[in-house]
Amino acid sequence: MSALVTGDAVVLGLQPAKLPSRALALVIDLIVVWTAFLLVSIGLALATDSLDEAAATAVSIATFLLVLVGAPIAVETLSHGRSLGKLACGLRVVRDDGGPIRFRHALVRGAMGVVEILMSFGVIACIASLVSARGRRIGDVFAGTLVVRERVPAGRGMVVPPPPPWLVGRFAELDLSGVPDDLWLAIRQYLTRMRQLDQAVSWSMAERLAGDMAACTGAPLPERVPPAAYLAAVVNERQARDARKAFGAAGAKAGAGGGPQGWVTQGATGDGPVPGAGAAGGVAPGAVGAGGVAVPSGVAPSAVAAEAEAVPGAEPDTETPPVTGFAPPA
Image (cartoon, rainbow, N blue to C red; front, top):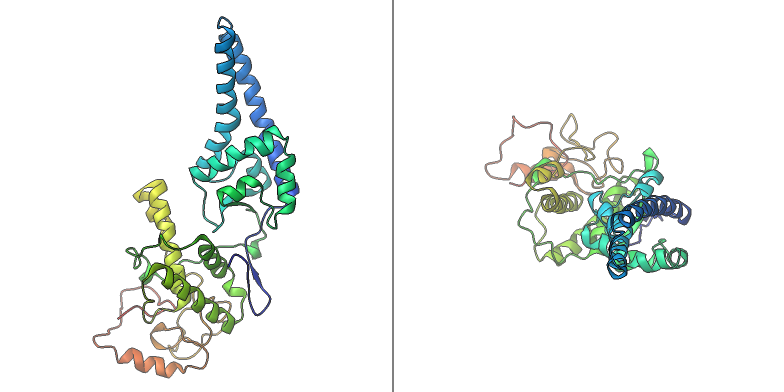
């Protein structure tokens, strides 16, 4: 699932960084790190001049590990994959599913970097990047990471649209531990590119991915929730959990977005297709009927309106903002 190809021959994938940009970022990082190592070594040599040879050797080894190995690991962990060189070249280290890296990812990359970058002068890393289809070095393979381009043209930005407000927090009790990374990657790729897909292809792909997600979580798909909105809400829930782990409750509030951006809105008449909606709206093929329910092609909006009116106790909400393209659950 890491390289989905639609019926329109649209490849859904991250944009891996090329070897020249990665090499330039590495050179910048090595210059900074080696400069710091030399300065620290000179300072320690002057400060520990009275120590014997064994103690001086121990101090040198500790300096090497802390500055040349520990410092890059700490920088990548605290900056979520953006060292000084990668920041200058517009690159970032991310997980295979597109999420931010953690300490364990940076630790594996740093440990493998001692062999494939420092001891071999980058030869092993260059060969591995040339052989890999996505330009990954050995440390990326073991850590499950990927170096991607962070600065892309404005029209090609990969932003996961937030779910409708009424779906935010609905899947807080969902068990996401059994969802594999390749499925997360496929879902994120679909959500960021669904506006470029044909309507029928977008709907069928969303249904397939939602079915895979339901099978991994063991929870059935919620009724009357379009598959694209369900996927966006689940991804939003995972981002909120990651934010809580990294930054606490304050980060979870900032990370748990929700709003009508990117989703089809209800038309002025409330019945029939919305002008300009469809693939650009990024949800389901077909029309948006009464009550804001997104329906696939071939389903009459009037049928959806009759189903919405048949819900007992359903009353219009006059206090909420403009209705999104998805109907709230009854």
